Amino acid sequence: MSAPLLALRDLRKHFGGLAVTDGVSLEVRPGEIHAVIGPNGAGKTTLIHQISGTLRPDSGQVRFLGEDVTALPFARRVRRGLARTFQITSILPGFSALENAALAVQARSGSSFRFLRPAAAEAGLNREALAALAAVGLAHRAAVPAGTLSHGEKRQLELAIAIATRPRLLLLDEPLAGAGAEETERLIGILGRLRAEYGILLVEHDMRAVFALADRISVLAQGRLVTTGTTGEIRAHPEVRAAYLGEDEMA
Amino acid sequence: MADGAAPTAAGPAARLSRDGLPLLLFALLAAAPFAGFGDGASLTLMARAMILALAATGLWLLVGGAGLISLGHAATLGCGAYAVAILDAHGITEGAIVFPVAILGAGLFAFLTGAVSLRTSGVHFIMITLAFGQMAFFTAASLAAYGGDDGYTLYGRTEFLGGRLLESRLVFHFVCLGALALVWALCRAVLASRFGRVLRATRENPLRVQAVGFSPYPYRLAAYTLAGMTGGLAGALLANATEFVSPAILAWQRSGDLLFAVILGGLGRLHGAMLGAFAFLLLEETLSHVTAHWRLLFGPLLVLAVIFLPGGLVGGLVGGRRKPGGPA
Ligand SMILES: Nc1ncnc2c1ncn2[C@@H]1O[C@H](COP(=O)(O)OP(=O)(O)O)[C@@H](O)[C@H]1O
Ligand SMILES: [Mg+2]
Image (cartoon, rainbow over all chains, first blue to last red; front, side, top):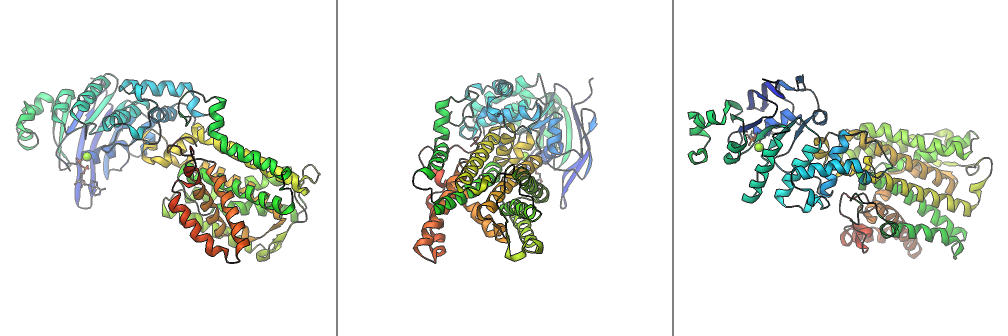
């Protein structure tokens, strides 16, 4: 078995008296979609924050590509290949879709302390940005201001931006949230194709999507990992069945 | 793609329509001395307007470009102006020395104060820039060797290679115009560059900028320093325009005036700073001829402008509005 992309070691985070992350340890392997499921308030977003570096854990370790990155700031983890999306879509609404992705390409290709040459005319940046848009099926919307895209398209764009950073691992916080039925189908298709190139830690409420996509699933409740297993194991897990999954979703 | 965000390069015609207004302004200013505005009073007013516009253009880089609202921009003008005064007191009036010292001195001041100020954000940032501005003001007022509160009268205007070029009002007019056009063109290029793109992105969504791997701080600090350098240039020109330097040059009211000029002009396009500065001075000039209590009228007019021109002058004018985030 190859070395894990990401390894969490006994991660802990308290908000006041509330243990929001309570001794979480898990691994994401290369080429794997590892889903994290659990009820609202279980601490899934807080976990993503600690992995990405937008929040410091109280204790424990985040290891990425074999190195301890627990003390690295958010932006530096991204430059090492740890990209994330947000539960509430975070894009640059006034930039075109292409420029949104081009900014990410720019961050990893040469210095951005260049002051005179127009960035929009840099063919190299635009080419790679367009490729990232194409990877999520958004190439035809490249010139459109991101703020005017549909909700589903904005979610696709956020994926494209993450891809444009050329990550090793994608942390996706409910990428299907708020998407309509048709958009959900499209996004599931896109995520399925992305797995070939990137490890993915997927936080998602849509159980149909989780069971269609995930290789392994971790179940989180009140900050604690209840269990980690293959989709088959999770499907069969009595506690999980009873507590967190509707019987119909398991069918 | 009127906003130049598309990969295709804009042709000369597109460029003319984009930059038509600022280019027209420059042309009018170039023609003005030969079209009935060559008298001393007109040249003095236009010089003031161009210098204010130059300072406002640099400030726009922060406010419109990076979304950083500084209430301490006048301090950088003070740095530039006092550089002229202090060098003058020591017998140095050569422009090839004076202007670089003024610009770099103001840039250094901006770099050091920005390094601290930019650790904060929002209201705290506004307050700390104001506080640094006030520190600069009281420092200037305590410079007894250079006039203290009373200010310092220059022996003469800055020279170039021993020639007293700036003594001629007409030459000075074109020096100011050239400086303004150059600063506008540079700021415009900077905003469209890789650096400018990062800066504009930090204004829209700093979290998103970090999420692609940039730390916003060094970009903001560089912008703050650049803005300070333009302030230094404006201050050096202002000292030459009045041949007098006093702490009033870096009073916080001037920072407020500059900020107002930027907002009045509009944050949609870079040349809004110029429009705002010109409008501001014209209004002040006109009203002060009507009544001695012109500030009583000035205030309400400015309030009306903010209410009825939310996009500023560039937003109110046809075709002047750009989508937020465009390269200005
Ligand atoms: N900054 C915060 N301060 C205090 N409590 C927080 C903070 N962020 C999240 N919480 C609490 O932590 C718990 C987990 O939140 P979250 O990670 O967003 O859960 P999930 O994403 O699984 O729905 C919730 O009870 C939430 O109210
Ligand atoms: Mg959440």
